[in-house]
Amino acid sequence: MTAAGFTISFVGQCIVITGGNRGIGHAFSCAMAKAGANIAVLYRSSPDAEEVVAKIGKQFGVNAKAYKCDVSDTKCINDTISKIDKELGPITGLIANAGVSVVKPALELTQEDFNKVYDVNVFGVFNVSRAIGQLWIERKQKGSIVITSSMSSQIINKTDSKNPLTQIFYNSSKAAVSNLTKGLAAEWAQHGIRVNALSPGYVNTDQTAHMDKKIRDFQAGQLPLGRFAQPEEMTGQAILLLSDHASYMTGGEYFVDGGQLVY
Image (cartoon, rainbow, N blue to C red; front, top):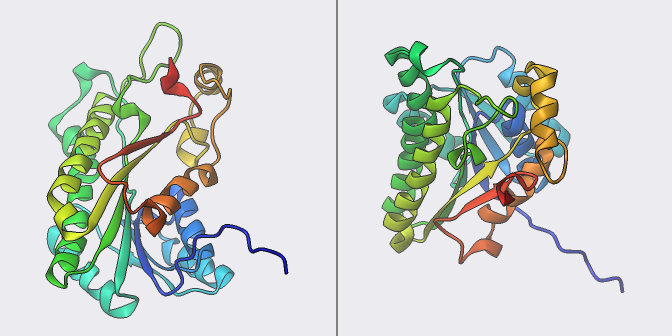
């Protein structure tokens, strides 16, 4: 008899993924569905989100549904999480992935720019984590949360050898959410809830595809692996952290960055 290979199954589980209809989030949605999970994707405005998520469900034979909700809207989040739990649940995991950036020199940034970035990248992450954490704590259910941070939590990205990429609200928001991860992990460990951060490096997405090729080539050239990642290359760490194989892992920040931070 041939021995079975190592697999991680999420059959019978429900994973919530914010921003799971595009970019890295879409890769997370596909990976979780492939592993057998029912998936609930939260999106803010994409007109094709319902179609994209339904296609994932059909492809992998799982229940998959898109829910329109701004992660910074507390009432919407609380109502939506309750609805997901009733329709697809019980919810067993969360990937808090939604994120935005504003690229401007510091002297041109405004309060509106700050709110745009921090409302999604920090408060939005907290908002959805709190809603699901409260659900689990009230019914004494263990769970796992994976928060998408960034290697930018640790560095200032560069456009060439002398100039920074001017997105200080983004970088500082990711530093904030990396520390938020530790705080939630510390508070909720007693309830059997694990919270970890996954911090991607440079990834080929629709957003990075619109960057100047010279900047992309420079950034890739600074990496030991010498290239941008594909979105799918972020998913293995998330799958591990959501699974019982990571039962002793909480409060960590795990970098999937092509070696950027070795320097």
